Amino acid sequence: MGLIKPGLLFGMMFNISLMAAEGCSDMGKNTTYSQPDTETLWGAEQLFYAVLRQPLADNWSDKLAASGLTRCDDAPISEIRLDGAKQGWGYYRIATASASNLIMQAPHQFYDSDTGEIARLLFAEHDFLALGLNSSNRHSDSDVVSADLAHLPRSHFTAMARAAVLAKANTVLVQVHGFAKAKRQVANQGVDLIVSNGTARSTSTLHTLSQCVQEHTGLMAEVYPDQINELGATTNTVGKTMRAMHSRGFLHLELSRNARQLLRDDRNVRAQLYECLSSYAR
Image (cartoon, rainbow, N blue to C red):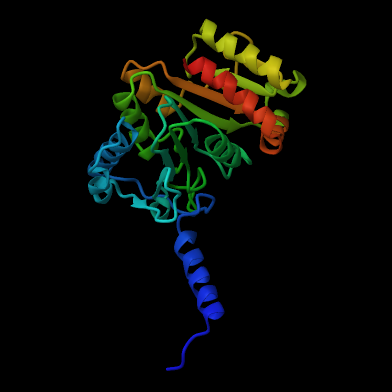
């Protein structure tokens, strides 16, 4: 067999590395969802607890097999990336050196356009402990099995939430969603952001957050249910899971199309949103 030229060898190695990383792209969409069993969800919770706690558990990788997730070898040294896309269980990033109590989830990154990209950018540019993204559309290809990680009673998203509260009692888990004004009562109100904690009772801190976002980003923000009576996330199972553990750390953001485009395209606006979220989480 003849020798391979160095340039050709490099190209082959580069292509192979791309192929290895391709399976861990957290923008890929699966068309099916398999409901995880109780043992798998328990394993996922144990894994999430091991990677979210401070300091990072030395034996965290021993818990991978039971979680149904795989580790992405192409992650930067500052992150752990986990992949459950094959079964529709989502993608996860954990910042191993972060002391933050902020976690971001985008459960509808394909259906609510740009929410996944906004979440990825915020995680990359600012101090978040972890990020969760869905890997299947909220409806499976058969429309029989729901893949909606914001409303399934038990999922890897709820396992992540449980582990986060156990690892850090002051966890603030921010979910980003998108809405179409044409389909909502807000169509004629100019509202770009609806802030809620998933309950029928607002708090003064929610109003402070809403005012902060409006003042610093120019987006019109309102608080559920005091200023607007829809999209309050009262049926969101991640929020319910956290409240069952006596945590008030669930935060739900509904973004208009205009707000999503602005946050996607303008780094300064993202920075202002992060500062408001960081202040809220203190």
